[in-house]
Length: 302
Image (cartoon, rainbow, N blue to C red; front, side, top):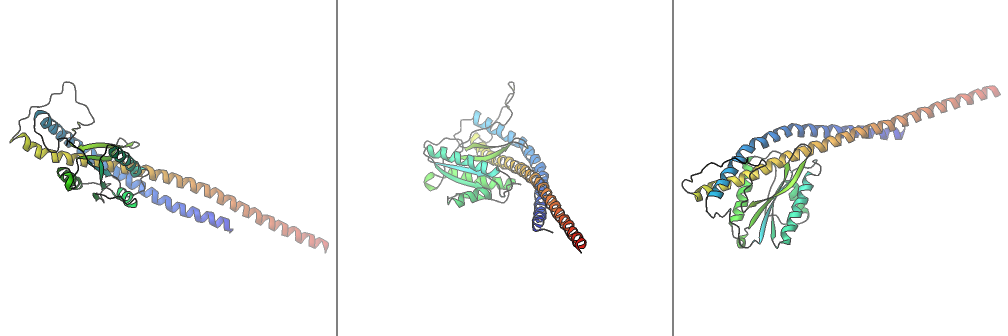
């Protein structure tokens, strides 16, 4: 066997091994994708209900709650950046990091100091490589977040928001995550979380939709104290779920593309190996024919 043919066959074997790995990752991402979509859909009713309740309290009461009050002078802004823990997901993490960089540049242009909070190892690695300081970071749950993870992040952000800026607190909080639209489209988005901006949801209310009447017991302030932290937790949990579904969709698409590329590469190397083998066979036949002719000529001369 010729050296060139051995090289081609070795490369075919290596690419076949890579193809098995990428195909396995594709199937794993596809199976997890279904569960991630179900969890995102299951969280929607609660998110809509608590948003509706917070809207009612914020609309029909005159309470000045710390989480809803705009601060007179905004000097420090927190940014929660939601990225993935692992790679092999195409441009998923890089897209949300770029969106975070655009937001940070905008905030600095307004004279605000940016305080990063990072969820996901990819974001942490990005900041660590550039030797940038991070206020807090979380990892290990990017593709399957639990409510406890969202609560831990929400508690840290609310604590930073309620602290004075002189003691390391922040004046506003922004969340940079990825919204899952469908299997093909996932869009990075920025949402200002605090001071509270009530977001009703994806579906606008009907024109004749009437809000129910609310009576606040024991008081509107107590209701706000109970509801607003849960509202922030719900928003962060929804952002984590949307990002998890987006990550798995991006990984499935990236692994399918890698598997298809591996198949094309195997076909190409197979053609090259066949060509090399045919050339070897032709060379061997030529040598045999040449040797036979030489023997015939020697016999004739004798």
